[in-house]
Amino acid sequence: EGQEELWYQPSLMDDMLYRIQEVNKVPSDVKKSLLDFVVDGKNIGKVTPKVAQRLCSIATQSSFIFELSQNIDASTKPILTLADDAGTTSESRTQAVASVMEHLRDNGYITGWRDEMYPVVETFDEVSNPVFLIERAASSLLGVLEYGVHINGIVLPENGNVMDRKNAKMWMARRAKTKSKFPGYLDHIVAGGQPAGLSLIENVVKECLEEAGIPPELTKKGIQPAGAISYESYGGKFKDDGEGVMSRVVLFCFDLILPNDFVPTAHDGEVDYFFQWEMRDIAKSMDPKYEDPIKPN
Image 1 (tube, rainbow, N blue to C red):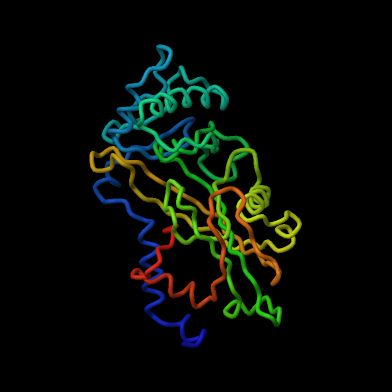
Image 2 (image 1 turned 45 degrees about the vertical axis):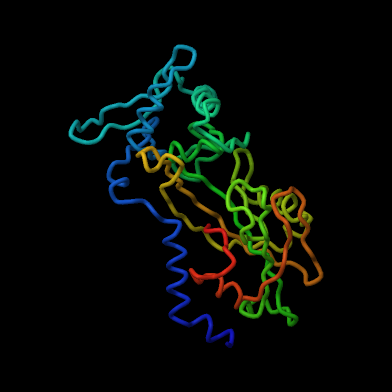
């Protein structure tokens, strides 16, 4: 199969659409039932009614942090918001919300705690002034937007033509079998969540060094923005009981042009090993029946 023919096959478009739909799964009944999480007039999250009730039932140090508030239009659904005891500053709200999430963690309701804080905002241009910060493992419980960076490690063909991407190669990663999510799956060379306090490029440089041993000067020289994608899905271990969580994600994507003689190395235990694929391999991996599972997002 020639490279040109492969990229223009209708079946490839069908396969890619399947992959998109796999990470955009919210049952219609769940979508209709979701309550908005609103603070200071900003719509920052989405929760199921049962999750909202659970959050509102938890008192820490004799204070309730979450509450349900009726919309101005009483005929519409209530909204989840923060109670007065959560305070009005980003710092006080961060501490108040953390007390509830730590309670849920200690009771086994939230798992996979990361000790990594995400900014809670309505739009990405507000990340420097977030409504509050939240532990990464708890973010989907409130259905807040989670931001991340995904990097494609590109090796150009021998002719060095930056426009000849069809004949380029891409570095892939085999996720460690110890990963809590998708152990042993195929993945990008580098990907990571966007934590509070770092710019996108600062995070890209950090993740490239930590996950693949790519020197900062190499990353800064070869990095190119490649757009952004978003998706939302409903899941979690309690989803069948109507108490699932909403993952609402925006991924900032980058192409990283790497020298032909550079070989990435696994540094932080998240990857077993790296290997190169031709672009036809990338296209074939989109097939739903592909024998080697690739991480859905």
